[in-house]
Length: 118
Length: 150
Image 1 (cartoon, rainbow over the protein chains, first blue to last red):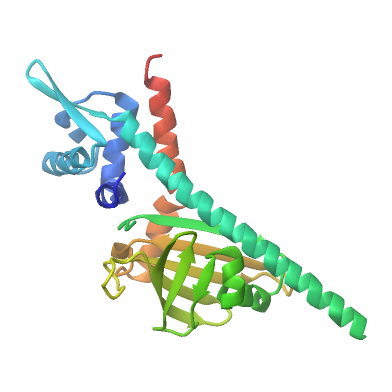
Image 2 (image 1 turned 90 degrees about the vertical axis):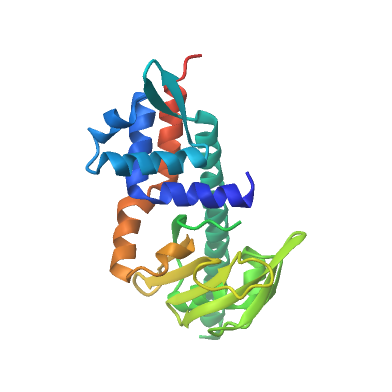
């Protein structure tokens, strides 16, 4: 993933309404915009806009079935996003663990020194 | 890697007083032990510094220094630009003493758009959605994997 696609991706998922749409698509597979609009607390137009944004990031794709346009989640793209997120979180966990070790060692050391002085 | 809208929030409970933890996260000699390989940083609001990670490095700009509870800096801004809300990631450390010898250390890394929000709004957003960001994506990916045939 390039930095630019990441930008678009995170901005897309940052919006709670879009996450709601994404959630419905994951749970229900290929569905139409009208179907989605019947299940969210915002307008048909808003759903259409969210789908455009999600499509642009590659998280969602569309196909025609008869007269209907159905939307579905792109599993690979979603996997990539989940992994990127997990990696960033894991990186901070490692850093925080290191801080914990350093601070606890420093604290133990200073207690020892104080003990020796008394 | 600039990621507007992204929030990562992690925390750890440390068996040490808050001032010890504060020194660990703000003294350059210490930072190089848990974070970057090489650190050039004066911990003062507005100070420009540099952090090296392996063969990659980048400038950082200190934002808040409020000992011993708040420290934040910006990084990941485009080369040649001043880091500011809108072009960088903000890393915020919050230290909360829990008794005399225990400290909760929380880090939040966030993209720019949240920065402009009022604190209460930001907190609400974080509470509702972000504690579980990784879980949200992970949950969707898992669910999707189950639904896929084969």
